[in-house]
Length: 277
Figure 1 (tube, rainbow, N blue to C red):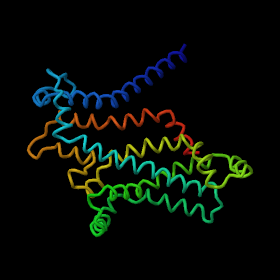
Figure 2: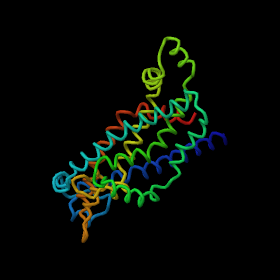
Figure 3: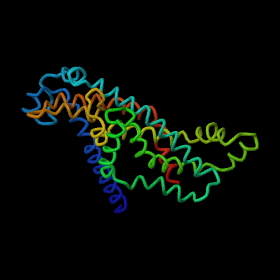
Figure 4: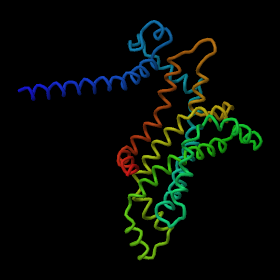
């Protein structure tokens, strides 16, 4: 009897903890949505979770037109859709060499790539700014795209090499017997098998690229080329901020990220599991 009672209490405690954690995650989302549809008067007269007296759909139209969210999202999409696939492809080739080819100092090469994760981005801001000014790469897509690949390659190699390491070498040997070259094994055998890891990388890297603010704010200062995070800062006024207008822009900017996650979600857990093997 005592064991049943203790099990029930432990179950109740678990559910309470889960409910509290769920509220911690859900409340900010609800606050974002409610604020996005409030007028300025409703926002300052009520609480964060209070319902608006009138839905202010104009916040979304203002964010798209006056706030130029379409332009910022277009810029972010161009950079993300160039950087993420190319970064994944480069890291896949590096990981293929580290895990499938007979390389000398393999561990040393892996450590070389992983060292990039230990360098704080803030340390590189001044050197990047000086070099980019001399090379005239400030306010260019290529300048931002290039530095994003440099900072993102370490994490990508960590994930892809962990997954490729778990693929049996017998598959390579069978492909060699069938007359496949190393390039064919990479493109036709290893990459298709690595889809879960690559999809995981696509989600995480697209999210980090889409939301990156620090480098974009240093390299891009032309309004026509700003990305979403930098562009949203223009919604903040010097003498006051319309939070409904700002949150509407934030809510719209979340849509592409959610679309990417929903497309690749089936591979996400499998890819992360394979990366830590």
